[in-house]
Amino acid sequence: MYAKSVALAASLIAAPLLAQDDTPAIAPDRQAWLDTCEDWDEWDKPAPPYRIHGETYYVGTCGISVILVVKGDDLFLFDSGTEPGSHVVTDNITALGYDIADVKALFVSHEHFDHVGGMARLQELSGAAIYAGWGASPVIRSGKPDPRDPQAGTLPDMTPVPGSVRSVRGGEWDAERPAPFVPTMTPGHTIGALSWHWVSCDTEHCYSIVYADSLSPVSDDDYLFSDHPELIAEYRAGLERLAALDCEILLTPHPSASNMLDRLSGAEPWVDAGGCKAYAAAIGKRLDARLAKEAESGDGG
Ligand SMILES: [Zn+2]
Image 1 (spheres, rainbow, N blue to C red):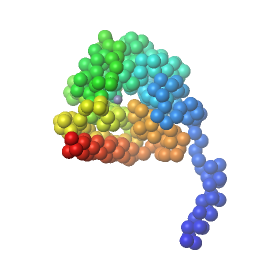
Image 2 (cartoon, rainbow, N blue to C red):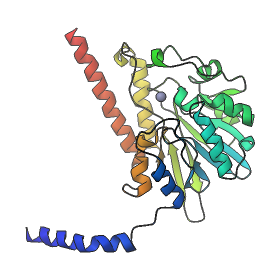
Image 3 (cartoon, rainbow, N blue to C red):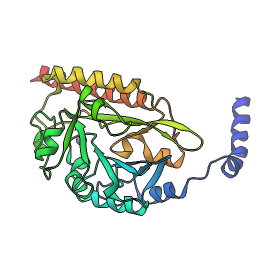
Image 4 (cartoon, helix red, strand yellow):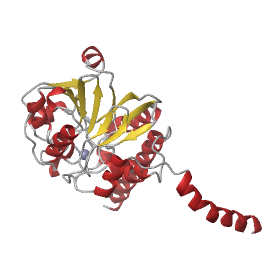
């Protein structure tokens, strides 16, 4: 009891000192993002760009991530946002002093319109090839949802992509990849979902950045994950691969899925070697809960 009160008193005295002396200042570009965006914000709401680390930038909207990586004169983009959201992306690239015409490759997390609905427009502006999971490429080319997608019945069509869409799968990718970005197949939320990682360096540090795909087990009303044991097996294998990645800065297609606001404000650590492991574990629990619920309804019906 005594020790507790002493600790409490000490923390009360220390708090203002910490705030003045030890709390790192939030960079102005991050503060601007925090001032503009809320948790699980609207998909097309304009957000200012901010530096993630080194030459990796956030150029998406408040609700949908789009990541820009600069390597010398070449630019690389992960996802496009929705078609209207892609205008925020191109405005942000311009605001950072770069040109969409210098984008050399467009990478895809998963084949849903909130993340790739603007790909046709970004490809037209950049002339770059799109790199997507083997299961995602046909959806991106045609603009039509995959009937095997757990959310197939609720997904709108997208603008078809007439230019080059390359499928990422094993050796094909290794031979062709235009930059040191490494894909990991993480299916489940969709058939063709990919997570990506790369190393970002500035003058002080090199960090492994992981853009871990959306992995939530959500679906149409009439879809049962338990009817698709092969997808569940791949889902779990993908979670294991994700948990095993060297992962220091975790990014996700929906910023709030990786607690972006709390991490930008300093309430949670920005660099966290356990980030992917925790993310994969949380998704694994959601999948277990979903399968348990399906089993329960099955028994009842
Ligand atoms: Zn999705």
